[in-house]
Image 1 (spheres, rainbow, N blue to C red):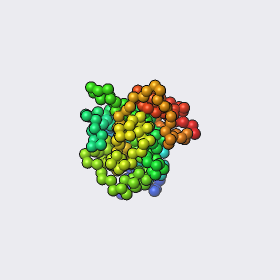
Image 2 (cartoon, one colour):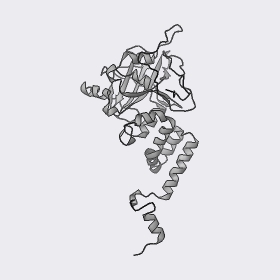
Image 3 (tube, rainbow, N blue to C red):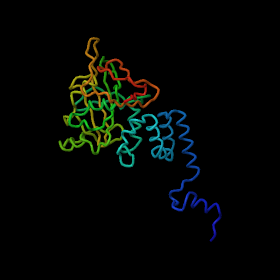
Length: 299
């Protein structure tokens, strides 16, 4: 049976090597182009993207396949490029939705067996966050400091209701976690996965770094807390979250830098418009912020 010209063009519009499964309906192509243009005009607003992804299954699938990745690449380009380096198929962890949530959601805090708060501190969206791999080094024991870890810095301050105490809540992500020394240490120590705690970004099970005895003293100095005043977890997919009691900073306190700081800081701000290198309230350490307001510094 003969085919019409339009049918022949549809079967092979770009070359003989393409199959029907590689061809995309024109309407789907235009929808993606329009959506990308719309979100680009809004600087990839996280609230708008969440609302769009909740409309129906088709848009949710489109967001999972394309839009979450585009948001991460736009809002934190250097951090994402670093995390993608060496990752199989350019995929980070379990997917881009979890990374986007980590960038823009403070997960709050609940009491755990090693860290009692006396009540829950709810999570919330943040307009922007600053992530630093130099800060991440402070959260790694010496034998694991070749690992790549980005941590939000400064931490998000939460005032405990009815008290004068403040919690510092932080989050982070490992690059290449499956091959990291931190994961190897957790496996070799046969640390059991924590009961009753899940990763707030991907829902996976987590290891307690307190139980594993993998929290260095430099983490407390970086956060501005006491050595026994913090707790953090690493999930099996390489996401990190934790909390600490913030200690008020006196006016005459030493403002020296941590021993693990260096001049090759590669910070990333997930919002290009805000300067989040500033220190407010109860943080003990002054971040190095002689670069641009986006947290990126010239080497």
